[in-house]
Length: 130
Length: 298
Image 1 (cartoon, rainbow over the protein chains, first blue to last red):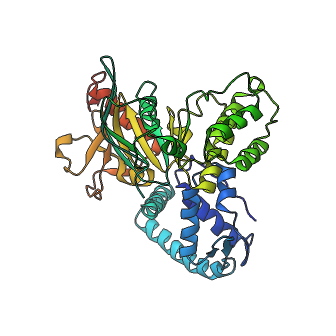
Image 2 (cartoon, helix red, strand yellow):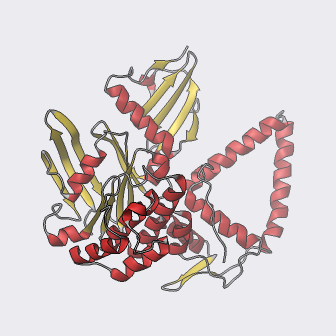
Image 3 (tube, chains in turn yellow, orange):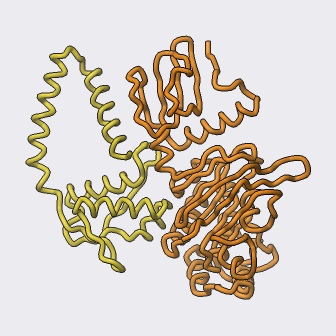
């Protein structure tokens, strides 16, 4: 079983924080296929957050095919993320390096690249929320 | 399912002063609703109207589809914890539970006992010996154990220290998850409510400034910064909530459901606290205590 935590200052919607933490635990192998997620009641009793926040997070994870709800019992992990991501990383890494080279060629210094990167990341997560 | 709380042009006057004016709301069931506003805004008046402690001066209000405090059944469907969680100082915890069982049709004794144990209260303890946090927890237990459909809490957190606040909200959220309660709770601090609410009502100087599901409110409000400009040139779909200007820059908080296409603006999301403060600031400026919409900084 894992435990969630919440950073209210991060600006990331609480339900997304729960989603990220489950994905992270899957990636690190802390959660494996067949493991149960904490019940909604347990999560809200610990974090003092709205039950709908947890339900929404679990629905999203279910939609992504990572977990499945068994009515009256709980929510269980149906897929693991730990191995699958490595191969994908290599491709992403190559693309990102190519992008950095392009940015340099366009005359951006490190600070500007970082600002642009962070700005894009923020607007991308913003779109995800909306 | 009917709305948990529905009001139409609801108003309440004390003598010559309007404590609540032109209040129209429709709150769907199954939500935790935060009622936010400064002290004296009319929050308690609205909550007292909802539980039937007050009668409206004009307008209409229904709670769970019926008139507030209409009869024993309606009283049983709504739980209420008044400000400062009033309890009987001379009685014990157990006495309060007996009282609850005696006075409420749907009393759930097992739930009450389990909660008392969970909070760590000794039934023989006198209420006078309890801490503020324990008193609040006992009052919440009494309100939840009557198994209402709607729970109304007036400033339940204002007198609690941070740890007691967290424990109170944990207990409250557990009840919501367990019994599918709808909740309306008030606070003068939005930061208290941010984690627990999915619906927000901002009440300032007896008027509802904004009300809606928090997710939708956050998605439709943006902070725009850019070169200084005349506000008359903005598209009609953008409602200006707050505007500040320096000699060369304008910073706005706008509400819009349309995408912001003007590339001269830097668009940022805003947090709930900034959103509430923008509406409070606007309400104050409309009252005339501050110049409206144009505060020029040197």
